[in-house]
Image (cartoon, rainbow, N blue to C red; front, side):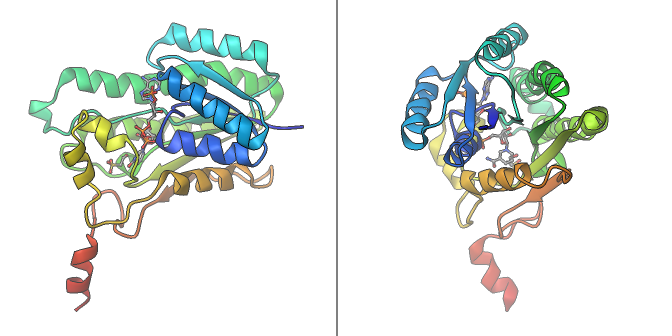
Length: 260
Ligand code: NDP
Ligand code: 8X3
């Protein structure tokens, strides 16, 4: 029987790549996001290319009622959710704490922390009733080490780290795996969103480095989700070869000088 994966934030970046990779491997996928057109486009693409079933759920993860309604609707359409990837998230702005935009702070907290909690609260009981499941939370190197001006974004990812550890304890008796995947810099729409559509500034983040790609993250999620039933990757951090962690980065052009 085909397994089903629910991926939040699948209209772009990691979420889209994760949904695509699992579809390629025969999983039925449920994809979420606010951008309806992109959801419909991905559904058509995945169903046509891989012959699996795709369910689209359009909602804003910050809205608790919308999340509850979406998961109720999903339950009418599918029997079980084998994997939940809590991926939807964003950074908004990059300012020193005294200059921060409070609306940006609320957006990040509401999306990255409260949104993740809203959906987990709906899906975890279903997994408990099934007697199995796997929750994969997309954290960040920003949830391991803070960086300058990262303040609130980093705090939300530290919160994801704490919630991942805590969920793993709570859900252990029910056979539910909980994994944190913590990527370093990866080229997606992330920087474009963080810098509010400023393409030049967004592009400059990836100058002179070879960042991770969304497919790199999808591959790691797939690996973790397909290990034997008794094996759980608890916490996995990955960076490109320009980063040792979230705060130490060496540009390609600097490497030669350092090697001398
Ligand atoms: P993208 O901007 O490419 O994708 C973000 C996804 O989240 C989109 O599908 C977007 O969908 C969804 N999303 C954002 N806000 C909401 C909302 N309010 N309601 C529903 N969905 C929402 O970024 P990435 O793929 O890079 O980011 C995915 C995750 O990975 C995030 O949690 C991010 O913090 C994390 N991450 C990213 C890194 C990077 O360098 N790129 C590194 C480490 C972690 P839509 O706009 O259609 O609603
Ligand atoms: C996203 C990676 O380095 O911009 O979590 O914080 S970073």
